[in-house]
Length: 315
Image (cartoon, rainbow, N blue to C red):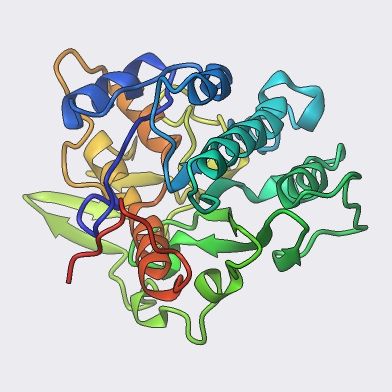
């Protein structure tokens, strides 16, 4: 959704959850969904799938999130973070055999990975950069750069509320490329998009379509995947910013309102037979569209060494 209008061609997806897979099939019927990501290295090695110029993904966040168990690499979902690196390594090996430059890598996760007790982030960075031992720090900063023997890496925590959606959604973005690609030129910029910051003048009480509505502040806390099924599925629910007071009754946001909070068009997830709980979960597990679109545009305009046959930016 974020990159389809800025010149990217999509080769394949990897999704196992039923509802998101149905959305992908409906919205992008010509792009194959490979399913289990653990099978991708073999498919790349055997030439069953294309070896892309850029691999973009977000391994399961539950191992690091406030709403999950926070077991890090001791959680099988956390270990998929290292499997993600296996995919990148195999992709680059295939590309090298075909005379192509290393791929770019964009990885997203909750910022809780920076505080993981198993040092999953240090293991991830070391593996991606090409070091033999994990990188350890007493406290991982919210932004940084590492130049390794295999790849250069930059990371940064970005908040969706500064990109035009009224949701405080802080996520960690990691960008990597070969040793001739300087990710920091893409991920860091001289000015923040402050013009898109939620205004403090936003009316908290108003009338719309005959209904009296009151919200608790000009932006919400982070949507989470269990939002439609649990009132208290996340600590962010307690301060009221994820609820609306309408006609003297407290209610959750509707699926459409959640889509708007993420930057999706209205009813983007309303597919045949879709249940509201599935839509809530799909949206809550997704990425904030304006943030990822900004990153994609930066990759196109600020990544001068990234020149491949598949990327043809539109004017």
